[in-house]
Length: 383
Ligand SMILES: *Cc1c(COP(=O)(O)O)cnc(C)c1O
Image (cartoon, rainbow, N blue to C red; front, side, top):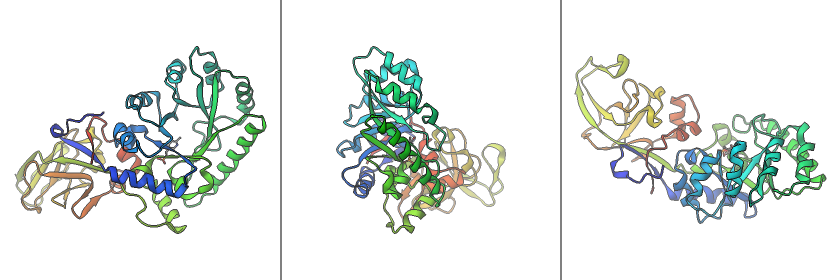
């Protein structure tokens, strides 16, 4: 994952340090100095590279790096970064021991996990964040189980209750935020129930990027900042809500550029088929450039005959199907394209840009999936 053999790779990712720092500083300014930040770096830091992002953030006084799994926590732990590691996904019983010994914060929503933690013979206390069910119905403590949780936690010797969190179901997909408000109300009620039972909750956190950008009442004392750390808006609706509330343009700056080099140029006569399935046939004598990457690298096959790349600042249309490891693009009308010319698949080149949102619309998905699915084996380079 921290491959540095940049000169030998066929396609690679460049991550702009300046843009990541801009995005974290913008949100810091917005939330104020007293609210902690968990930088969400799951999924290879949304495709940007675990270590690259952790390194860039190292001097930014981030309290947590949040990951999905124990495996991801171990990858980051090797870097020895200063933030603590928070695992937001499930940790199986047989891995709890390792997780606690490593000092990772765990997200807990099953009473059995509490019982398992209580039985561990670890030298350290488990640091846990309760995940409260408020209406997303993904992970979360069921209301009926809350009294058992409270009972277990009041009598524990092996567990430190560090936080309580929830996650909104419907902030990104709408400009009507009443469902989020109902979840927030529910969160408040459950917090009160826990605190009235005499338990303290040092860190309360509910907000992912959309809530962090839109609603200060969701911030409590920590936000979990993911997609927008990378300069991407969670959705059009989030952007629209933000602007309607008077927010400024150009708040966030995308940080990722995906590049490759031309691997072959060929002159193809009018009437020739391009690629598997003969789905494209040239309508004129054409010049085709072959690019050495494909769906294995995360370049979605739905972009067949649909997407374009940038070469010499101009758009070159994808011709034929995306292959596992190759793409063909039309450079007939771009003068002087040569083998090993640099190509931009995602990001900016000269005056033009291909955004993750543009690519997502071609692939019928969201910007999150576009960046998160870029093959982790491709080298990442901080620029
Ligand atoms: C992924 C994730 C986030 C970050 O969400 P963004 O929309 O990317 O900011 C926050 N909290 C949890 C629990 C997550 O799984």
